[in-house]
Length: 135
Image (tube, rainbow, N blue to C red):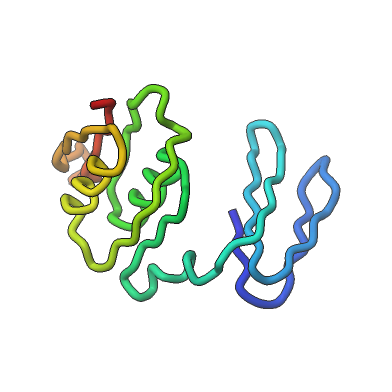
């Protein structure tokens, strides 16, 4: 996935026609089926993390989990059925993970469970795991 703020990028992918990107574009490469998805975006939404903000504008529940995972450095297990395309719209600024999860249960018909970090055999620790299910 690439989001371009300024300049230009030429994407050369195997077995695909090269693609040029211009500012305010997002390109997602799906390696499993070798498809490129290209769309116009508000780049500020993708740079907000630098200021402690996460802005989600009409993104799917599955993409929300990916973004929350990166923002809070946790692992998500999306077990909710029939909701992967549910659209989520929220802005977080310096909110604790638990507050973000509570907000998610208000705007979407899901519940969550948190599995705390566990010690691993190599003396490291697993990430905190968030399990999302249907309500």
